[in-house]
Image (cartoon, rainbow, N blue to C red):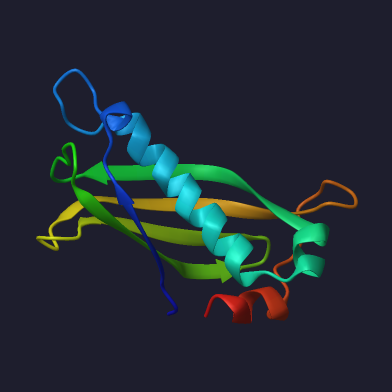
Length: 129
């Protein structure tokens, strides 16, 4: 299992009326780290041939994040087969290593050519294994 990580700092715009990171922001970060992982690993040819659509998203909130926290977003592909893959995203407080949220998302690979689901090729699978 190959992991991909990015770091972000919580800003005022990320907060809700309780001065914690808004739940919607976590969902956005899950999408952002997935997209960045895809764009970092995929070749230009793969990017021009395929894209992913989200089929299912679950997220579990465990601990709050607040203004100024440095967060580590860690993602990896849990499983893939046929036209879908399951991606995990874990969000940690970098300073305490405390898990703040975890997410499991199911994605479908789609062909740019015909806009239909496409089988995950071995080339794509090995990029993330």
